[in-house]
Length: 313
Image (cartoon, rainbow, N blue to C red):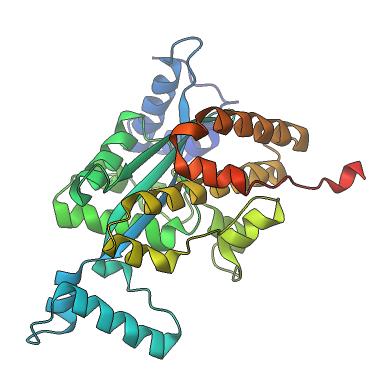
């Protein structure tokens, strides 16, 4: 077992556990993460962050049964009626996540040095929804529980994936950590070691409202933001069997989130502005090398924008 370094990024998190009891579960989990890092082979980039985006669609059978009992509506009729009603009442036709199931998850594997290592697509073009959910949670465990990075993941993506695990009977003990104190659990809203929600970061955990969302944040640093597909189109694309289009859209959102994540590392002091720009250029080259086999990457590069650095004017 490796020596615990007080200069390690994880050391401050461990202090409450060490003071209380050296065999506290929290201590053991942190040690496991340190051992995972120390076992990484020389020359191999280790995954420190899972940056994710989830797309979902309504479960029409559930909507018909729960929202319109006794009316014998088909799944398609039930979804259409509720979406129409929501649009009339709220101006939006997005059905609550509690009635939805994942149709695509895209993960970007990010290194300790904030380099993009790989993009993984779990979508209905290859897997059933229950397989998508199971593969996501098993992947998180197999990579040593890397920090999840999202934009509004606490408000949507993670609650959806937790409920899907409940629906499909997928055990996620590591995520719930029932024997760890509440403020140390991965699900704790303020525990950014396990889950960094960039929307929470910008709003100081809900103290304000971030009007414009990911689209705005990406646009501020010259990246594409929303393009051909909007979130409310996912249901329609799914109904048309266009799973690839949904996955491409999801890839673009993940890339926007990655570049926004990099800039937050700058303002927090983890990266210099020069280092961030080097990562951006490095990532663009990485994407260009893989664009031929990924339509989502092709779309993103076609709409690529460079941040105009005011310090160089």
